[in-house]
Amino acid sequence: MLFLELMKKGGPLMWIILICSLLALFIFLIKVFQFHRDEIGVRELLRGLFNVLKRDGLVEALTLCDNTPGPVARLLGAGILAYQRGDENIRAAIDEAALEELPKLERHIRMLGTLCYIMPLLGLLGTVLGMLGVFESISATGNFTTEAVSQPVWQALLTTAAGLTITIPCHVGYNYLVGRVESMTLDMEKAALELASFFERSRQNSSGQKK
Image 1 (cartoon, one colour):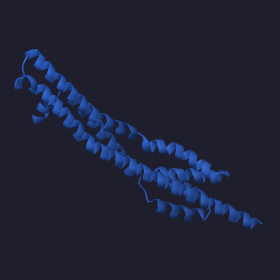
Image 2: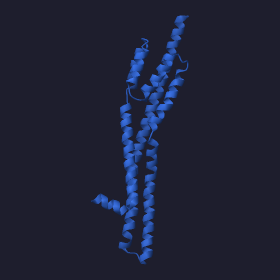
Image 3: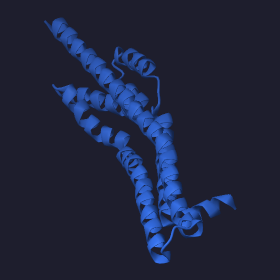
Image 4: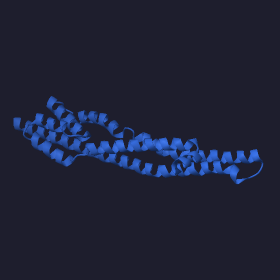
């Protein structure tokens, strides 16, 4: 098979690059599935929560958050729980929940970035080793022949090509995931701010009515 022949000509580093590429693909697919599962309509969720909370349906609002996937719903649930307990600083409770959610969003993405960085270096290493093999073959035979240098030249070219070919889509996938994390983080911040403002207005209205 052509694939196995190219892997053999490329040397051991080709297998290392292949393993890194499969690991990068695995991480990318896991994160895409996670983000797709956690993707919700934040505006619709907030509208539903505010309608329920205006009727003092705290339990119903918590149930709605529990039944909605994603970090935004969990942050809003933490804020509603803090309001139910009577905490003065609801935003602090939301920020504390965010500290637990952000690492979940960013998990494994740094590893993907590391793979994007090292794979072209592995290709470059293969090139250097191939060139060393060329000089070693010339030194051993005493002259330059095609048969003597073909294998190390193949190794030099194939490892470089493989490293660059895999790095390009890997960088695209990495930037896509980073963009998704930034988008979800922005949604979390906006939702938290709106919920905290809603409860602040509710408390002010309650204080005004008591007076």
